[in-house]
Amino acid sequence: MTPGLLELLRELEDFGKANDAAAEQRSRKMLNITHDTGVFLALLIKASKCKRVLEIGTSNGYSTLWLADAVGDGGRITTIEMARDKVEMAEGNFERAGLAPRIRQIANEAGRFMATCADAEYDFIFLDSDREQYVDWWSTLQRILAPGCLIVVDNAISHAHQMEAFSRLVANEAGYLSSLCPIGNGELVILKES
Image (tube, rainbow, N blue to C red; front, top):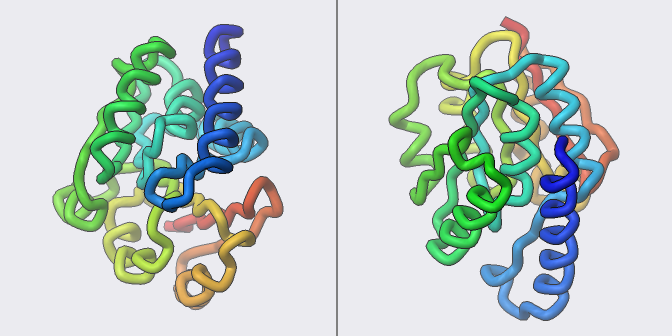
């Protein structure tokens, strides 16, 4: 990671914290991942040599920048966000970071977009969105994730009550191995074994 990107990430961390403390409406908050979660995601992507990443929940692009840096040259991040103001904010941050060529930004509802994706299209999926929809998305997530690859779900500890049905569904699914990692707000790591 370049010093310039690290500086931008620190700036976005400070902005996110200040913004979220002042914003009264949830829709106005950035709700960014923690710094240590960014490091964890980068580690997983680099170790797995992932090049085709899907992120659901862009916000201002903080987590996207971690992902885009981690995939390296030749890698591609597709990131989904419905809030138009956050899409525009993220676009500016991608340009500032010099990582825009690696990022495909989609302004759409995630379920609708994923329905158009090819089988095994992604080798890493990061979920940081509306947790109540994860159960409904599960069959599509299974279809679009390549064998031997990972799904990582943010807020698995901080919002465990909202994740309960999804976590149970994953735990009972043959061919999937999962582990809850106490990093940041809790990361549920799911491996599609074959």
